[in-house]
Amino acid sequence: MSKPKFAMYWAAACGGCEIAVLNTNEKILDVDANFDVVFWPVAMDAKYKDVEAMADQSILLTLFNGAIRNDENEHIAHLLRKKSQILVAFGACATQGGIPGLANLSSTPSMVDTAFTTLSTDNPDDLRPQTKYTIPEGEITIPTLYPAVKSLDQVVKVDYYMPGCPPESHQIAAVIDLVVQVLQGKAQLPPTGAVIGAGNSSVCEECTRTRNEKKIAKFTRIQDFKPDPDVCLLEQGILCCGAATRSGCGAVCPKAAVPCVGCYGATDDSPDHGARLLNAVASVIDSRDPVEVEKILDGIPDPAGMFYRFGMPGSLLRASKAAWEDKG
Amino acid sequence: MAQQFEPLIIGFTCNWCSYRAADSAGSMRLKYPPNIRLIRLMCSGRIDTTFVLQAFANGADAVLISGCHPGDCHYVEQNYKAQSRFLLMRRMIAQMGIEPQRLQLLWASAAEGTIFAAEVTKMIEEIRKLGPLNWKGGQLSAVSHQRSAIAEVAV
Image (tube, rainbow over all chains, first blue to last red; front, side, top):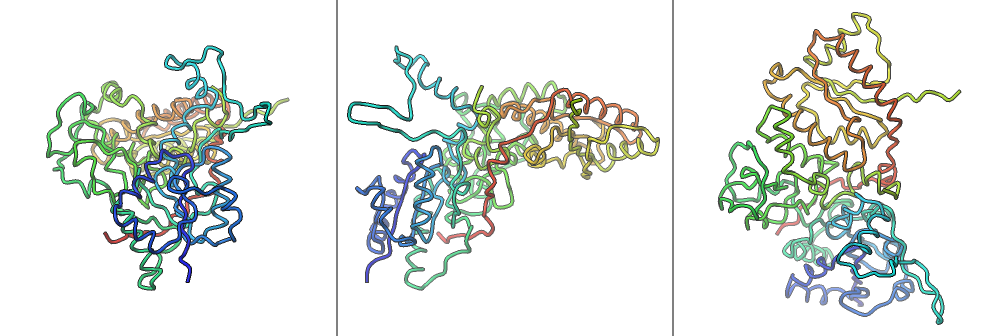
């Protein structure tokens, strides 16, 4: 009997999700033992036309990482959806838009200008990328950027969500184990639409630091002082996103004295991760005087970028006015 | 003649002061334009950023958060939390391209029906001048998140 088929794809992503899968160490051999890997651009040579030639629904499991940033990303999302039985939004970018989603705070022209004109760029002819260009051999094309980045479920139906930037390797291993058990008839798949490979509490619950009542008179950053190793980072004025972020990572960052950046996204009961973070952070400010509160808030120079570092496209507002008007 | 733009404003009022202020404005037969839709919360401290963003994403042109005067909160100090949230929210929505005037904070005691009516009227005129917000970011996300159940994978 032939083995079930497995695919993994990266859209607008950094490649960290792939590394996280390889970080499962010998567990990766289970993938090979139980699956026939048919498409995985990072790990093996296969072309889009090979996927196009496959029968619909012939791939059992596709892990899709990366956000939908351009028309190529969206095209492959539709293609893999058609060819796959189970499509998993894998990692922060696919589930919520991730770091590429921060592009939704700016318009495409201003971003391209930044990339092609700033000091570190050597561009004497002031060139800009063209989606089509004719050379003697014919016309060449590159994908077209979208004005706003989308999460995977904003373009196709997603069966499961696996958050994290990247998802923790032990969680990936657990998910691989589960799928293998399902194949052997020893376990059942969770209901469609579920978040897998994560908890549904907050990072604080997994954090070992001591928590007291929080009253913050000044926000600061870890490079500016040496935080107490045992006390809650937020209490010490470091903007830690643990309070409103989904558990599952084991609180690895705060345990290592690095504030949580919120990569696991919101918990099930919250439609907007950034909104919850904002609530939590504003509530612990120790001042009743609006002028003083403003002064304390100057310690958070980029609230939107901070609270939506991994989830702008999946948020309620989704993209700034500059992005959807595509100017400014 | 061009039709005058009628803004839609969502107002979050608290049960103990500002909702009663609105109520007393009604009892006094004070008139203010019907552009504001009031939602009563128990306390202004109940204001969740989610409510405000939801209002903007669903078509509101502005949002008003209203509660008891500083020091008068029925729940001792929760209106100060509303104040901090409001100030931080204003900074954040400005980054999203929403003019800060579209989010306002108003303290009004139960006896201040006149002030409530006057301030709401002022706000409506201000937003009328500003024009519609017509948030399109939300429309881009027609496909909602399908997350429904949780499945914890044993580790």
